[in-house]
Image 1 (spheres, helix red, strand yellow):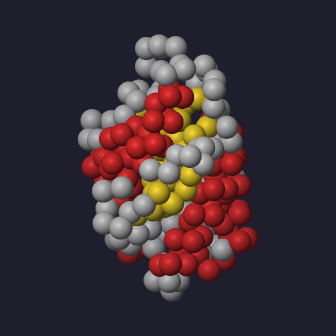
Image 2 (cartoon, one colour; image 1 turned 180 degrees about the horizontal axis):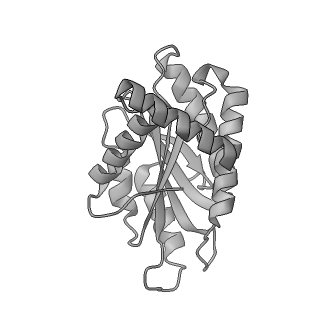
Image 3 (cartoon, one colour; image 1 turned 60 degrees about the vertical axis):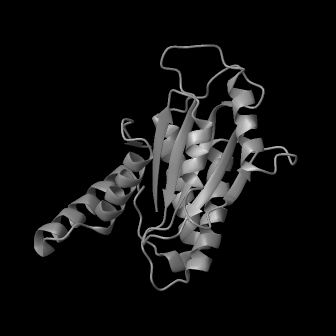
Length: 211
Protein backbone atom coordinates (compact mmCIF):
# COMPACT_ATOMS: atom_id res chain seq x y z
CA UNK A 1 0.00 0.00 0.00
CA UNK A 2 1.21 3.48 -0.85
CA UNK A 3 -0.05 6.78 0.54
CA UNK A 4 0.48 9.99 -1.42
CA UNK A 5 -0.48 13.52 -0.46
CA UNK A 6 -0.74 16.86 -2.26
CA UNK A 7 -1.78 20.15 -0.71
CA UNK A 8 -3.78 22.77 -2.57
CA UNK A 9 -3.64 26.47 -1.90
CA UNK A 10 -6.93 27.29 -3.63
CA UNK A 11 -10.28 25.96 -2.33
CA UNK A 12 -11.04 23.87 -5.43
CA UNK A 13 -13.46 21.56 -3.63
CA UNK A 14 -15.87 21.35 -6.55
CA UNK A 15 -13.15 20.63 -9.14
CA UNK A 16 -11.58 17.84 -7.11
CA UNK A 17 -14.94 16.27 -6.25
CA UNK A 18 -15.98 16.31 -9.89
CA UNK A 19 -12.67 14.74 -10.88
CA UNK A 20 -13.01 11.99 -8.29
CA UNK A 21 -16.55 11.20 -9.45
CA UNK A 22 -15.78 11.40 -13.18
CA UNK A 23 -15.07 7.67 -13.53
CA UNK A 24 -18.04 5.59 -14.65
CA UNK A 25 -19.81 4.13 -11.64
CA UNK A 26 -17.79 6.21 -9.14
CA UNK A 27 -19.55 7.23 -5.97
CA UNK A 28 -18.60 8.64 -2.59
CA UNK A 29 -17.42 5.61 -0.65
CA UNK A 30 -16.28 7.32 2.56
CA UNK A 31 -17.81 10.25 4.42
CA UNK A 32 -15.86 11.60 7.38
CA UNK A 33 -17.31 14.11 9.89
CA UNK A 34 -19.99 15.29 7.45
CA UNK A 35 -23.51 15.97 8.75
CA UNK A 36 -26.14 13.36 7.95
CA UNK A 37 -28.10 16.00 6.05
CA UNK A 38 -25.32 16.23 3.43
CA UNK A 39 -26.52 13.56 1.03
CA UNK A 40 -25.38 14.83 -2.36
CA UNK A 41 -21.93 15.84 -3.67
CA UNK A 42 -23.11 19.46 -3.86
CA UNK A 43 -24.17 19.33 -0.20
CA UNK A 44 -20.77 17.98 0.79
CA UNK A 45 -18.89 20.58 -1.26
CA UNK A 46 -20.91 23.27 0.51
CA UNK A 47 -19.80 21.89 3.90
CA UNK A 48 -16.15 22.05 2.86
CA UNK A 49 -16.60 25.60 1.60
CA UNK A 50 -18.32 26.63 4.83
CA UNK A 51 -15.45 25.34 6.95
CA UNK A 52 -12.84 26.90 4.69
CA UNK A 53 -14.59 30.28 5.00
CA UNK A 54 -13.64 30.30 8.69
CA UNK A 55 -9.93 30.47 7.88
CA UNK A 56 -8.22 33.86 7.82
CA UNK A 57 -6.35 34.70 4.61
CA UNK A 58 -2.72 33.61 4.58
CA UNK A 59 -0.31 33.68 1.66
CA UNK A 60 0.39 30.06 0.63
CA UNK A 61 -2.00 28.77 3.26
CA UNK A 62 -3.35 25.30 2.50
CA UNK A 63 -7.03 25.07 1.60
CA UNK A 64 -7.31 21.29 1.29
CA UNK A 65 -5.40 18.06 0.84
CA UNK A 66 -5.80 15.64 -2.05
CA UNK A 67 -4.52 12.24 -0.99
CA UNK A 68 -4.45 8.75 -2.46
CA UNK A 69 -4.40 5.37 -0.74
CA UNK A 70 -3.44 2.67 -3.24
CA UNK A 71 -3.26 -1.10 -2.97
CA UNK A 72 -0.61 -3.10 -4.75
CA UNK A 73 -1.87 -5.06 -7.77
CA UNK A 74 -3.37 -8.36 -6.62
CA UNK A 75 -5.04 -10.74 -9.07
CA UNK A 76 -5.61 -13.38 -6.39
CA UNK A 77 -8.17 -11.37 -4.42
CA UNK A 78 -11.55 -10.42 -5.97
CA UNK A 79 -11.93 -6.73 -6.75
CA UNK A 80 -15.02 -6.45 -4.55
CA UNK A 81 -13.05 -7.81 -1.59
CA UNK A 82 -10.21 -5.36 -2.21
CA UNK A 83 -12.66 -2.46 -2.39
CA UNK A 84 -14.21 -3.44 0.95
CA UNK A 85 -10.77 -3.65 2.57
CA UNK A 86 -9.75 -0.28 1.10
CA UNK A 87 -12.84 1.39 2.56
CA UNK A 88 -11.98 0.07 6.02
CA UNK A 89 -8.33 1.10 5.67
CA UNK A 90 -9.32 4.60 4.54
CA UNK A 91 -11.66 5.06 7.49
CA UNK A 92 -8.92 3.92 9.85
CA UNK A 93 -6.46 6.27 8.15
CA UNK A 94 -8.79 9.26 8.48
CA UNK A 95 -9.39 8.54 12.16
CA UNK A 96 -5.65 8.90 12.72
CA UNK A 97 -4.67 11.47 10.09
CA UNK A 98 -7.70 13.81 10.24
CA UNK A 99 -9.84 13.00 13.30
CA UNK A 100 -11.57 16.41 13.39
CA UNK A 101 -11.41 17.39 9.72
CA UNK A 102 -13.91 16.90 6.92
CA UNK A 103 -13.11 14.26 4.33
CA UNK A 104 -14.70 12.31 1.52
CA UNK A 105 -13.27 9.38 -0.40
CA UNK A 106 -13.92 7.86 -3.82
CA UNK A 107 -12.53 4.53 -5.04
CA UNK A 108 -11.22 4.06 -8.58
CA UNK A 109 -11.16 0.35 -9.35
CA UNK A 110 -10.80 0.41 -13.13
CA UNK A 111 -7.00 0.14 -13.05
CA UNK A 112 -4.62 -2.56 -11.84
CA UNK A 113 -3.84 -0.34 -8.85
CA UNK A 114 -7.13 -0.05 -6.98
CA UNK A 115 -6.97 3.25 -5.14
CA UNK A 116 -9.02 5.77 -3.20
CA UNK A 117 -8.92 9.52 -3.70
CA UNK A 118 -9.45 11.54 -0.54
CA UNK A 119 -10.34 15.21 -0.17
CA UNK A 120 -9.50 16.49 3.32
CA UNK A 121 -10.17 19.95 4.73
CA UNK A 122 -7.17 21.87 6.04
CA UNK A 123 -8.88 22.93 9.26
CA UNK A 124 -10.79 21.06 11.94
CA UNK A 125 -14.52 21.55 12.27
CA UNK A 126 -15.45 25.11 13.36
CA UNK A 127 -11.75 26.02 13.64
CA UNK A 128 -9.99 29.13 12.36
CA UNK A 129 -6.60 27.40 12.35
CA UNK A 130 -5.01 25.20 9.68
CA UNK A 131 -3.74 21.83 10.78
CA UNK A 132 -0.15 20.89 9.97
CA UNK A 133 1.16 17.55 11.19
CA UNK A 134 4.89 16.96 11.64
CA UNK A 135 6.51 14.59 9.15
CA UNK A 136 7.36 12.22 11.98
CA UNK A 137 3.70 11.93 12.93
CA UNK A 138 2.70 11.29 9.31
CA UNK A 139 5.36 8.58 9.11
CA UNK A 140 4.04 6.96 12.29
CA UNK A 141 0.48 6.98 10.94
CA UNK A 142 1.58 5.33 7.69
CA UNK A 143 3.41 2.59 9.57
CA UNK A 144 0.38 2.06 11.79
CA UNK A 145 -1.98 1.73 8.81
CA UNK A 146 0.41 -0.63 7.10
CA UNK A 147 0.61 -2.84 10.20
CA UNK A 148 -3.18 -2.79 10.44
CA UNK A 149 -3.49 -3.83 6.79
CA UNK A 150 -1.10 -6.74 7.25
CA UNK A 151 -2.87 -7.91 10.42
CA UNK A 152 -6.45 -7.51 9.23
CA UNK A 153 -6.07 -8.25 5.51
CA UNK A 154 -3.18 -10.70 5.08
CA UNK A 155 -4.66 -11.74 1.73
CA UNK A 156 -3.55 -8.35 0.35
CA UNK A 157 0.09 -9.28 0.93
CA UNK A 158 2.66 -8.84 3.67
CA UNK A 159 5.12 -6.60 1.84
CA UNK A 160 6.08 -3.54 3.87
CA UNK A 161 6.89 -0.09 2.52
CA UNK A 162 6.74 2.13 5.60
CA UNK A 163 9.22 0.17 7.72
CA UNK A 164 11.64 1.43 10.32
CA UNK A 165 14.70 3.16 8.80
CA UNK A 166 17.01 0.12 8.98
CA UNK A 167 14.44 -2.13 7.32
CA UNK A 168 13.75 0.54 4.71
CA UNK A 169 17.42 0.59 3.77
CA UNK A 170 17.48 -3.20 3.46
CA UNK A 171 14.27 -3.18 1.43
CA UNK A 172 15.62 -0.50 -0.90
CA UNK A 173 18.86 -2.39 -1.45
CA UNK A 174 16.95 -5.57 -2.32
CA UNK A 175 14.66 -3.71 -4.72
CA UNK A 176 17.59 -2.05 -6.44
CA UNK A 177 19.36 -5.38 -6.75
CA UNK A 178 16.25 -6.96 -8.26
CA UNK A 179 15.94 -4.13 -10.77
CA UNK A 180 19.55 -4.51 -11.80
CA UNK A 181 19.13 -8.28 -12.13
CA UNK A 182 15.87 -8.26 -14.10
CA UNK A 183 15.97 -4.86 -15.74
CA UNK A 184 12.37 -4.30 -14.63
CA UNK A 185 10.95 -1.74 -12.17
CA UNK A 186 9.77 -2.96 -8.77
CA UNK A 187 6.07 -3.08 -7.83
CA UNK A 188 6.69 -0.04 -5.61
CA UNK A 189 8.19 1.89 -8.53
CA UNK A 190 5.31 0.91 -10.80
CA UNK A 191 2.75 1.98 -8.21
CA UNK A 192 4.51 5.26 -7.51
CA UNK A 193 4.65 6.00 -11.24
CA UNK A 194 0.95 5.19 -11.65
CA UNK A 195 0.02 7.53 -8.79
CA UNK A 196 2.22 10.29 -10.16
CA UNK A 197 0.30 10.10 -13.44
CA UNK A 198 -3.01 10.21 -11.54
CA UNK A 199 -1.97 13.38 -9.71
CA UNK A 200 -0.64 15.03 -12.86
CA UNK A 201 -3.89 14.26 -14.67
CA UNK A 202 -5.89 15.89 -11.87
CA UNK A 203 -4.23 19.29 -12.18
CA UNK A 204 -0.98 19.27 -14.11
CA UNK A 205 0.54 22.42 -12.69
CA UNK A 206 0.48 21.24 -9.08
CA UNK A 207 3.44 19.26 -7.68
CA UNK A 208 2.88 16.00 -5.81
CA UNK A 209 4.75 14.71 -2.80
CA UNK A 210 4.76 11.59 -0.65
CA UNK A 211 3.76 11.87 2.96
